Length: 503
Image 1 (cartoon, one colour):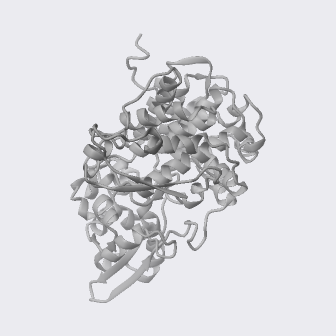
Image 2: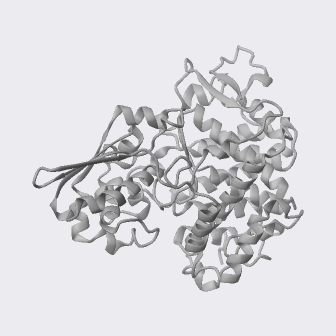
Image 3: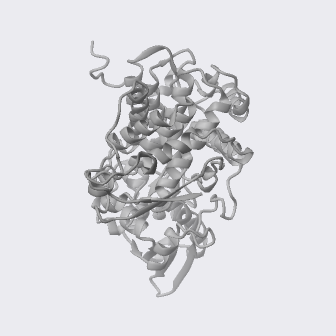
């Protein structure tokens, strides 16, 4: 890996194109390096993982709305939409919009956490949509997805967005554009312009994950994917982008990040070096914010030790800065303690999540969020006894580069009414690659079968899994096999019409 130093440059200074981050990203995307077998296997796992979550969410309101918008943009070649017949094709950027929303809606697919946060599986819908539209093969799709993961993971390692209240899709737009560049074998010049354009139009605030969290949390990554496709299309037509996007005097570092004096480092593979960053990412066993994964496992372990939960006086979760300030009491969001809060808010409330996991001994992507579950009196009582505090050591471990030090969990202190304390801690979720029972192919398949049960027919489940597991051998113009269809009654209630389907 090569380390690239970043800073802001005054307009009077000359920063050669070859030294700009966008150009270095473009060179990585244009490098025809072979994909390692283990990377191919993990890409297949994540294609299955995305489809699992999309199947479970296919009838939910935001997904139905995104699909209705997409269906207003039919195209002869085009790309498929999850849930619709394989012959239904729409413009690729709208397929990316609909499928990206379906993948993201339940907050249940893969994750990578470092200097910033990400769900790198969000790269797959836009890259796949363009691959279907342009008639690419499974092997070409694999190469492109490897690039998308590589660029996003390394941006997330090197550049913190959340401290400036910028949503993490600002790393996704450039990574998806780079992946599409790889897919289409575009020259570095074109990818360079597309990457910069994608950064420019996908920089948004983190209010989408604060306060009354709305369905935009699911739409945001789909928007980034859609914008990435449009950015590549413009660049292919010879149009340029704001440049240098990261380093310019009025650019991203100077005004969106830590200012003209700030310094950043981003590592990227050298020429001929394999793209393997996907192997550092991990999926979710539970449908909730990633920082809750280890704590759900810990709640499952603590429940039998506590016994009668009515005897709990208080529960304090000692954890990282992120967990405390984003999903804990440090967020100072009253909605996180409100049983009438949206699902999007409850899956960002570790107080709610920990209470339900203690009571139920686990977590369910539907039952754990239904209003009647949140309104149980005993749940409300326990919920309000739970608080979080930041522990500097857990924050340090959260940001550690050493896998043996890395941690996304916390230490929990349960104080009973009789004064007895029960203390336990867990650094990593059981399903994490370094956890107690890392997810393997069988786990991804089981997750797909569980989430798609009753939504896909048994025959469609089998057909999809066969296609996905043989992704590398899918010939050109056959990637529609990675779609799945469902019965019309599984697609949710009809949505109100908008501008695109004005009658």
